[in-house]
Length: 352
Image (cartoon, rainbow, N blue to C red):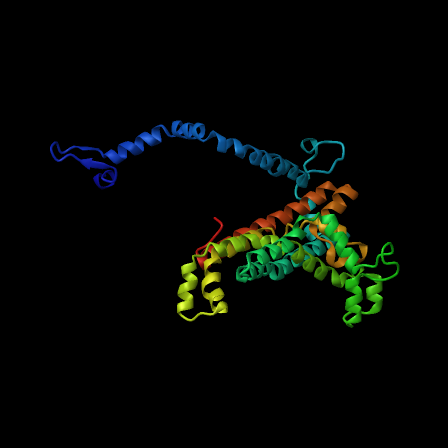
């Protein structure tokens, strides 16, 4: 008992009694008046907390309150009654989607497969591109030239999804309004190079399911690579110049400096961004897919979000749509937990 008490008590040599140390007295006072200290801190920095109010409201109304509608995954769909008044249906919707024998189950698993493949290809080909762009920007000596290149790569991110998909459609799809009976310029170029047939070019690449994933990934890289490179470029310019000088003294060239100085210095940033990217793997924005796909490309283009949109809005089966999205989000949560655990064990760098 005395050994444990000795952690926070000191012995008075004159009287032989135990008493609290001055440090423990301060800790007890802080613990006793904890909420008073918190209130004083909030009052002192009230301007900072006022600035947090819009963010809190956004999360409240667009992140937490919509969770109430997840109850629709376990209740009988009713267009008239609210979710609270609907009858409990248990896990019937999940059973229908996972182990059913009808067309609904087949389309759901096809959508899950397409969602995973589109996300995996985006991670495999899209994630390294911002890092390569950041390395490229770092090697440009002229500030004016670097600014021009950065602005040119950032611009596609600020286009609306409708404008971006319209440009993609004009480039690869036959347009009877602007081009008459001619295929898009990209389709025509591929046909001239012999990579695709004239019939495929005339029909439009967006009408061929085997080209949808490539079009989706290439357009995604074009749209987001430049904007996503900002984080990595900021991490690169924060590297101390003395690290480059030490590498140059050791005889390291540009490629060796990138390998042994730049990449290790931004490794923590890469890991954090990779974990967040894995966490959002299955959260494909359905707007782009919805604007690019058609009935001919459902085989490779239909994802969980468009599946839920088609059955939830057009098919009036909100329970099925809600259950599909819920399973998609649960898998995404498990992915981010797994990625974070692996990253923490492998590199001692993690999101939490």
